[in-house]
Length: 101
Length: 375
Image (cartoon, rainbow over all chains, first blue to last red; front, top):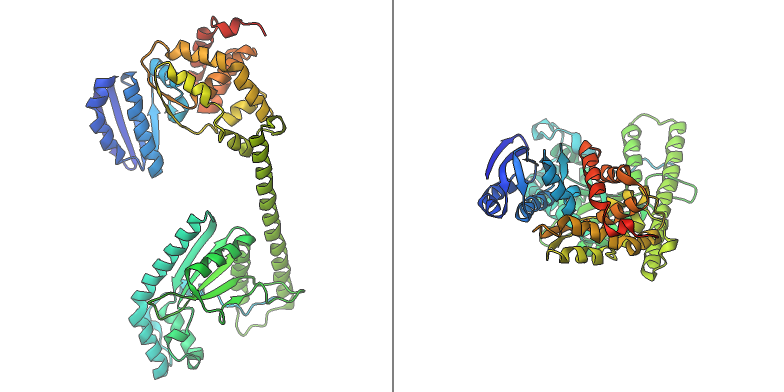
């Protein structure tokens, strides 16, 4: 699992590449800690190359959303595949995030 | 009549403060006052920030929303001008009460008195010099309405002024100030009469806004009482009533049942987006939602079981209950794929992916027991 973070103006984009299962969530938790510092602006989680998400991955997304909400920022989840969209829907997470196709 | 000889303590805000530009004929007494002002200017600025923050915090803690809190320390030029005109009136800087001025602008007229009450608790009021301009008008006159308190705090030898008025009073005062102060020019009576008419009209508008707020508060109380007493059929669905209903946590039981499948944790989220969904599927009263919960919880649970029962997902949001309830309701009432897509469009914005999810849900649900149950 790989995370590439790129910041331009007040928009930070994190490209998530691979499978976000439980071990991977632990592996990239430091990257999400880094993302928290940008939570006052817009953070885009680019999921174009994200293949799978587990509950641990959802928790990472959620912690970022909470940080953004408390700082007046915004988290956008971009380009999730059909399976991940189903996970978001089945767990009631779909309308927690702004989702871009 | 229209009162125009009021004092606008904020009027000198736009003057460029350059002491050198104050090329005025000031006697030694006035120069001494100016020097005292210069020596104490940093302290005035400290007190300005302190008083403004105290006010802001207190009003916030009291849940009193105001339109603005303004503050300023009088500029050098403005003070020099004042001293040039009437410096003999003041023995020292302590006799000037408007070096530091603050203004609280409220939305509602009732709130002026609430702010005043907070100011009275926070600061020592010099009642002899404080003015309630709202009370000085004759019964047949309209004009400047504002409450001015002269205040002091311990460890600061100078007094300061706090003005309190509504947004409309503020608008009138600013318009009147901008067009009314033309010293040496006689103001046509027609202008004075028109400003006076406007003041009277704005006073009426302030009162009407206040009445509307009182009526709304009363409506909310009645609705809350109806919700608490369980008379939900009498309560139409709107933003206020739905929020009161949400306080009862009506989907908690269903959410807990769904969560228990995987020992999942439930993340609480706002369910207000579902207000538009419930209305769009034809529910009219909170009683309708209550019946929907009773009649469709089993169907919602079956949908959730099918979707997450065989997964290891152990986190859900509190919107899963209303989401699956609406899906069960729509499918059972013949809304089909289009109905589900419309629900997702309302919740998440229109997207082609909503069509895909609706298709998937239709496919998943068609063989579930609730779909084939009669009645």
